[in-house]
Figure 1 (cartoon, rainbow, N blue to C red):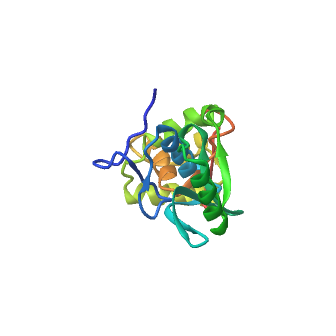
Figure 2 (figure 1 turned 60 degrees about the horizontal axis):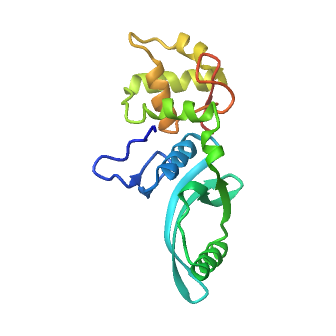
Figure 3 (figure 1 turned 180 degrees about the horizontal axis):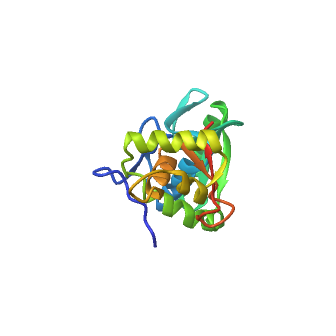
Length: 196
């Protein structure tokens, strides 16, 4: 089974360009969902809420929140669900509703959906790849001027003595460009857009 690398020295924490602080992610399925969310153009922010109030009681909710244009959602990753007593689960649901959060359910089938799964894994492998300033500026300018643009065409327009594909994928991980990772396998026809 493929495993996403955790932050060095912090195996249970996940961070990306969309997290203001590292998010606890002890389960591999949750980590995988966080990678997908980090590369999803509709997700603007990822955060964690440890506790919240349900009436006068403070409850351990341990919730991962994704912010999208249409609201904030608590991730409910079915393979990573915590088992709670019925009373405890009821209090957690009350606390989450009081925070104005809706559920975003992700099933094992959702996680296995191709080509998104393979595409996200391939792109995320470039997360820690440094991109020199000149390359970053050049790529972002081309995408802003020409975009949306197919990845193959973008790579043709980039002037570099190295293969520029790694830089483009690293910029997607940094939330500086958007890649269509759900429609077709990653390749020359993949659409690249400016981050809006």
